[in-house]
Image (cartoon, rainbow, N blue to C red; front, side, top):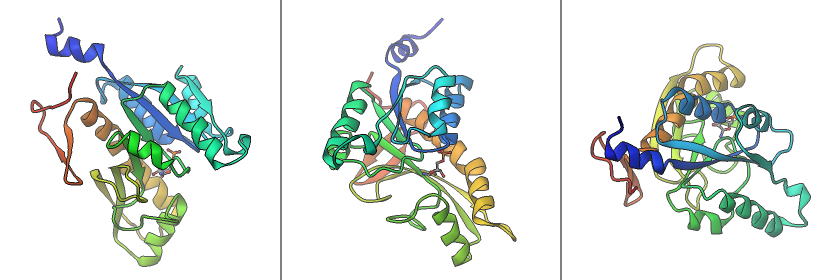
Length: 228
Ligand code: GRF
């Protein structure tokens, strides 16, 4: 028997749109998190890719999640692409947009329209190894070049800057002797990204994340503020 509050949440699950460009292992972690109950009160309503060859699209299909590709190559200019992309997002009526390895710079208009409702996963401990030019393997190459002993991953809200939005959750991962960028990338994904992205989404879906003065606070379970 559901309590009244549980029943209300069931009626209004957090609607998530996931934006992807590549392999989609983070998307898979979110799909699995929902299936296995690590993420509650949430559903993925649409997956959007800018890359027609992204394996993430296959993952969405296998899980029965509606997906579509909006490729910049199909549009005359950036403005047209941005409008089509925004339309694809709006149609899904998301409560939360998750950038899971999405390599497109978001239109400013979208960032303003979805303030504190867009999250990104970045494969380092922000503010290290982030900002313009730090994406994919480059992040891990730079971490190894600098010789850091700890790296990790960060989930943060998206604002107008590159990797500058309020930090929700971070997890550290050790760098080991003999690491290559590829080996380190795999360890960071397994030990950090696939853990903290589902965790952050569960907190948001359950009203536990607030943003005050550019900083996130995570409320204890039972002190949720999400409006149903
Ligand atoms: C991840 O390393 C993520 O942190 C970064 O892009 C990569 C995406 O991998 N933003 P996948 O497509 O989720 O497998």
